[in-house]
Length: 312
Figure (spheres, rainbow, N blue to C red):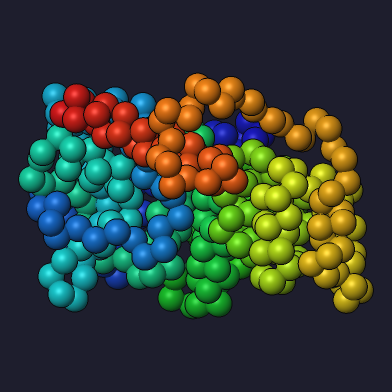
């Protein structure tokens, strides 16, 4: 940013963020009120996960001691309830802290303005998953395109004619190309998207395999599970090319995934005598790995619940 631009920049006022010009002229301002948690509904298709992690524990402690310091943002619904636009983590923390109400800014926003605020209030936080960015960017870009076609824009923070990824890129840390790459992830089946979030599949191969149809993607999931290997970028390019040519089959997917990639084949060995005494007699040998993984998952959830109870 140039010195002149930095000098001219001023933060928008609250009424500029949440009101139309007509509403400001008529003196209609957003209302701040305490709303019962039972009357708050989540934003439809909210792309950001609310995790019960270390940060949530800290937030619960803060809410327990000081209350919610920054109001959530909601909009009224026709049935007398309210839709959360920003503040899903604060609501969860308030529930754990056994609070009854949540301090909120109530503003009568349209769908596009609400979507843009929802994304903007979450996208800059730490540890945003690729899947969260993917769906958030798609939702915001769609809202911006829709607003750009209107002549009665009411959300002055967005400005006018915001109808392309260029404007979105100017307000994020990602380039226009990278935004489109993230949006491609929304075409992945949930199993593959989860592998991207966990880091088992990198961004570049993920984008390539997002062009496969659902059947081919599910065949790929099976191959990954069976071969204990995820596709490299070069392999993903080959899968994409074969799909475009109409030659990609379940057999050819397995053939690609059976190629040796030693650095991806991680194996963990446990001596049988150490675990046999814990296995039910009806668990067959080939089911042992699945049983152990499920047991660890249940134990992990137990520990998390225990930690959350101690935080209250």
